[in-house]
Length: 431
Image (cartoon, rainbow, N blue to C red; front, side, top):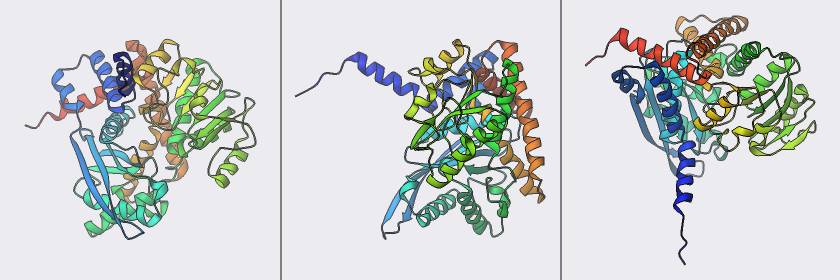
């Protein structure tokens, strides 16, 4: 028996697919900002597409004796302002389109904070939760070996991302160094301190969120003391941001992770929650609040919302139910282009990902500098330099927003694109 599908249903399905496509969102964000800058179309064409996209097939010897072939990606969107910079994620849903979008966002992120990097990103389609440490090491080393002519301190510098960490970076650094026949610490950032990592790197993205939230609150005349904060994604970024905001007097009223969530309108006790997470590896079942399911945390009554999970969490379906006055995007691409319009119309201040979560890449830049000079800074120096850059970037973006009467996201893209185009004009185009 055949079933009929209405054209309306198909249209709605394709419309939703477009809204949730990270590459489409990156394109729309770019085009809106580029149009307002009235750029020369030739320059737009140069910076719109990635300069290089590499796909590798990775045969890996599994613990049971079999071989599995994984697909890996590395995209360099731009190297106009310096080496490509961007993380490597291990996730079952990694696609070339997603990596291309994330690489473009890295170009704009580095330009917004004014550090001399372009944008890159990498990923492997795999489920690390179902792989042993040995399998992950073999996968990482094979991926590095296959990209040995792509990555490098002067060309493309990876870092941790979703489901990768310091250990992953140590394996990449070691594999690259074995091929180079000498130790090359500056090929990756986010390494262990013992292998040339930077003090303050682990907390850098969450600390950067704190710095821009502070400035946003000042801009709105809002005190952080007693401000209610909800955090979606209680991993490295979300947990650090929550802990630091709580120290500034904010009430963390809700947190969530992939396993569940918990809320308490009077505030969750952060030290106890952090101990619970350390023991249970999840915020779920924390006895200090009531359970929250799925994306419902985005609609919890709060003053400040920090989406620090994955892309496409705030869409046109739930944006109208967000109560926060400030949204600080700890994750990459958590708000779709359509949702952005709804939030902007409602007067919500959205601090875009390319600004809000750029603390990580900023301290990665510090790590790269320290590795190259062989001299390392104290953590208080790292944090002080980070605050200076994040505060300056926030005010550069708000100045652009006020001058052109646009949202902070459009302003951040305008500022970033202008800086990249300025670099092209100064360098010229080799042909």
